[in-house]
Length: 444
Image (cartoon, rainbow, N blue to C red; front, side, top):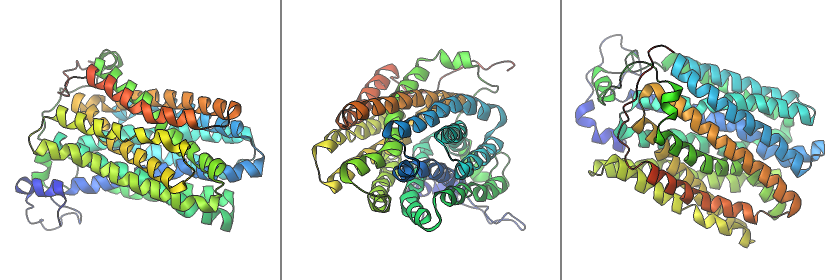
């Protein structure tokens, strides 16, 4: 049965009979195969990232770390993550999506594997820093791939699908990591999970090209993908991007919301351990439920704006209303520390995760709505860097508050209020999501 996007576009994308000797995946919907490749890259990215957080309470026992020392390791990953965004976003615009993504996954997979050989606080800081430098490539790479393969009207839905990979990767961790940990030890756990990226590389290098270069896409689908207005050729200068008010609005949104998303991933297991006395073996079901709920938000948020656009809404109205609904759904997480009922906590945090994923399915798409394809990696990288500055501040604040008050109350209040503040700034700073006309660089 066709997906909603396929059904709508059926008249345009009716497949012609494949000619003799055509590639086996040649179809009128190959862009969704590309979306699946991005989905699994995102899943692998979150798998490698989350393993350390889920094993954190056990590693604290093994190495005798305090909560402050543990958050210090997390902090250095986040510092590197911010630096990595500044580098990888621009690199993707310079060398392209196919090679850029392949290099990035290889580098972060090696870093993930090297965790198995660490033996001290300093060595963990170093390897987490390395992982943090490489993993940001996931965002600009994914956004550029979707912008290359999907017209504007479908990008939020495609973004929702590939972003669901982050939740799948996060669900695999509490499902698999405890079994690996107690069966083979923590070193083998890092080694096995870190190796999975190299399997993905085989499929990526075989199937990913641009629509213009791919032999797996039909002429009809290629014409549909390229139906949006073509931006002026040439690279866009950093200075040109930074002069745009829309760039700074996007950076502010990322600064305020990424800090909460990454804080959940790194430190929510610690909250469960301290407040509900859950062990590593008991993390599995609660975390799986949270990320399963988040999957619905990821796809649902992207579907929502796509649905309204099909019904005649403007792109600006559809994206902003969908984003506002998602931001409102993050507010109830404020009450997490006011209850001792585990599954109420899981429900509230799950709702906040779903809301974040639905929000970013649309927020990421606003970059390709506003900026030409030659600047998407740069803008995504700048936004990611801004997000990591916020994340680093949130992590330091967490360590301080846990050391002085031992309470998560203020932290969850911040988590439940930041999104509405971010949406308000973006709404007034970016009144329209019509494409910007940027001056291309003559030589860069």
